[in-house]
Image (cartoon, rainbow, N blue to C red; front, side, top):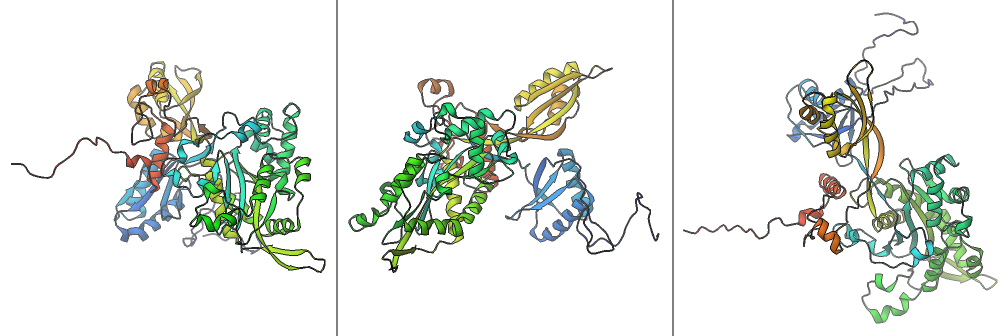
Length: 560
C-alpha cells in the first residue's frame, strides 16, 4: 500500500467491486470532468442470445454476464426490450472462449446455457422505380401495386390501403386530420452533402437524380447539383445516423398546403374506394365534405418539392387555413418528427432499421368547426377533434412504413473486410470458397521474401460464419485463418418478391409454386434472409404456409 503514485505510473485500486463499470474516473473533487474511456477501434462481429435452460438460473446468468463484461473489455452485453440477453464478441473463437468462461468461471460451473444461432444485423431500404426521374409521367402512372402489397403478412400493414408507389395519405385516428407524405431513396453521397451542407466529390449525379424525382427547378435543362442541394437544405427538418432524412416541401413549410376542412362530423375527406360505409345513402353527403380541400392538396403534390407561384395564387389561404396552420406548427410538427424517428427504427420487411430513405411531408388536412362570429361578421374556427401527439406519431409511423412497402424493397447487409495469407497452391480453393459465399477479392500481392500471397477481400457478414474451418478444410492448411473487421454497408441488389412472369423467365427459372411466393428454380438470398430474421423475431413468416409434399398423406388407422 502506498500513499501516492507519481504521474505516468500504473497502480492497482481495490474496494471497487460495487462499481459495475468498465472505465471510471477517480478524483477528490466532485466537479471533476470525467475522462474519456478507451476506444480500441474494434467492433463486435458475432452476436448470440444467451439464456439459461432453467428459468431459476436467470439471476446467476445475469451476474455471470456482468462479471464477464467487466473482465473482458472486448465483450459487449446488452438486454433488449423483449428480454433477450445479447452477448457480442469479436469472432467465433472469441465467442467460444467467452461462453466457456461464462459457464465454468463466472457462473460457478453449475448452470446450463442455451445459445442461439449467430445473429446478423440487416437494414432495410428502397430502390428507384424505372420512370421515377420523369416526375409528371411518374405521378400520372397508375400501374398495379407491387407484389409485396398483395401477399401476407406484408399486405396486413396498417394504412397500406392509403399508399401507392411511395406516396401515402395517412389518416389520424378518428379521421380528424390527414398527412400526405412520400418516401424516396436517399443515396449516401446526398446524405453526406446534407450533413456537411456542401457539395461532396462524386455526388453531382445523385443530386440531379434526386432533384428530377422531386421536380426541383423549373426545367430539367437548368437543373444543377448546387441548386438541388440548396433546395434540399431549405427543406431539411432532421436526419439521423443511418442515412435517413426528413424533408418538408416548400408548400407545407410556407403553409400553402395546410388546408382546413369544415365538416359537420369533424372528419376529413376519405376517397370512396378507401371508405367503408355502413349506410351508403345516409353518408353520401357527409363523405363529400372536404373534397375541395383534398383536390387542392393533390394539386400541390403535383408541384413537387418546390411550389410554383401560379399554384399559390390559385389557392389563397382562408381564415380557417390559418387556424389549421397554427395547430400544425405548434402541436403536430414536433410529433411528426418523433413519428419519423420511430418509423426509421424498424422497417416493414423484417423490423430491421431503415437506411438510406428520405421522407418528404407534402400536405396536411385538418377538420375544423365554426364557432361564434366576431364583431366584424367573420366566423371563428377551431380544430374539430383533439389531436394528441401520440396520434400523430402513430399515424406518421404507419404512413412511412406503408410508403416504403409500396416501393421496390431492398435489404442492406454489412460487409466484413478479411485479410489472410495463402500459398500458390491454395489460391484455387480460396477463390472457390469466397465466390460461394459472395465474397470479392480486393487486392492480392506477394509478401516480400516469402512465397505467400496476402489477400484482402470483402464478404457479407451473414456468409462469414464458419469461414475459417471451411478454408482450412478445402485448402488443406495452405490458407491461414482470416482476420475479419467490419468494413461497410452495401445494398443487396435483389428484389425479394420477384417472380418470373414472362414465358422466357418461366423457362429460365421455372414455374411458380401455387401456394408459395418464390419460383422453383430461383435462389433468392434476400427473401431467405427476410424469412430468417422474421423467424428469429417471432414474426409471421410467409413460407410457413407452404405445404411440402401435400399429395403424401398419412393414415392412422390400422389395416390388418
